[in-house]
Image 1 (tube, rainbow, N blue to C red):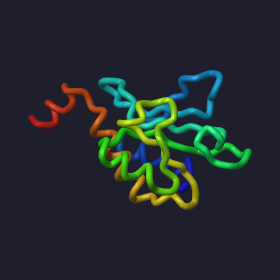
Image 2: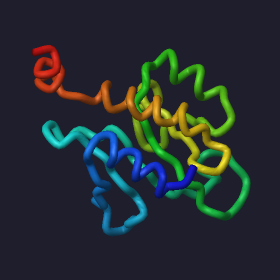
Image 3: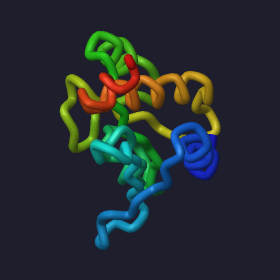
Length: 127
């Protein structure tokens, strides 16, 4: 999986484009709900050492909100880490690379999207 493929999937599925909110780090892309403006995905390039990895080349990752029980399970898998700069109980950091399972990642994005909806958005869905 590439960062481009991830961006396209999010845009095609949820109709949102990446926002670049941080002038000091233009590689960081925020994806959020149009109505409540809550973030559901954050794509970043990180120094691998902040994730406990070896190497000097930046690692592309995405932060996603997940069910805390699922997060505990996922953090035990290769390519999944405690969330970088987010609540580590409710968010995870997932590496984006050629080994990333696209279907699994798209499912996690869907979960994050659902978990970050506002109460108003959830009520509107029920109607």
